Image 1 (cartoon, rainbow, N blue to C red):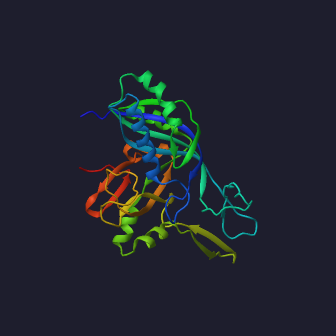
Image 2 (cartoon, helix red, strand yellow):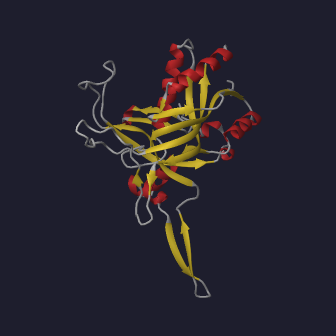
Image 3 (cartoon, rainbow, N blue to C red):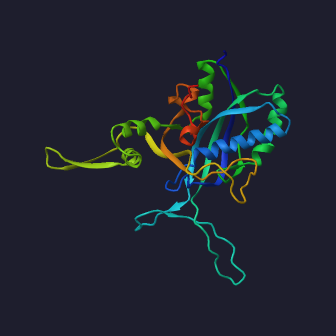
Amino acid sequence: MSNLKTILLIPHLKIQNANALSSPYTIGFPAMTAWLGAVHALQRKLNQAGFEQLKFKSVGVACHDLNLQTHKGRSDYVHSIISTGNPLDKDGSRPAFIEEARCHLDVSLIVECENFPCDETGFLHALPTHVHQLKLASGDILDFSEVDIFKIDNEASRRTLMRKLMPSYVIIERRELMIEAMKNGQNAIDALLDYLTVKHRSIQTESGECEWTQKRKTSGWIVPIATGFQGISALGKAENQRDLTMPHRFAESVVTLGEFVMPHRIKTLDRMLWRYHVDLENDLYLCKNLPISK
């Protein structure tokens, strides 16, 4: 079996007003379900445009810049969300609205392809039109750089792709940190917070001065990330559901730990590529970026 991977690189997507509320209790980088969902929508558009056999197997996300729309005044203790201004009512009053956390992003998408079309020129000509029709994490795509295609079959070609991603930070999953902590007796929320907490300590030196240090439980840029959903109701029908052909169920967000790492630290492509994984026994619908054993 060949180890050749066909990678579609969509570089420097400029996204405005993306949804930064990745779960009911985390704010920051959009949920992984948003990225995989957008790429799946792009695949469906391309399938309908004549590339019927094309399949996008997995997705990597490299973040070049993120501008979270929050504000903290000089004497403020917490940050406040910068809200959008909605049009006034007929009587001139401000309508009620729900505050939404937004962010502006510059990201590159690394998409692993299967059954890539032989007509590469026609594909590259059709792709930009469909990309501009997308919403990425509910944000608008303003622009992106020229799309590139890589055939990854050795270390040299992998390094060429990684150089194209610099400078950026690639999001990877660190679920194993949560698993290890929970095996040692912590519950999920304590394990999550334990790795995110910055602990400050003061030490008195021999000269009598006070020296402060700050440290986390482990090294690396560890962040909470939303990676899927867990069903909390039985499969069935719901009134006014969007797709009448599919069963409906209520679900809640699954949040775990992730890490932003620079591309040159990624040794294998599978470490940065996310793919869907369904665990029906535990009612889990996840995005995972570790290789899935079959």
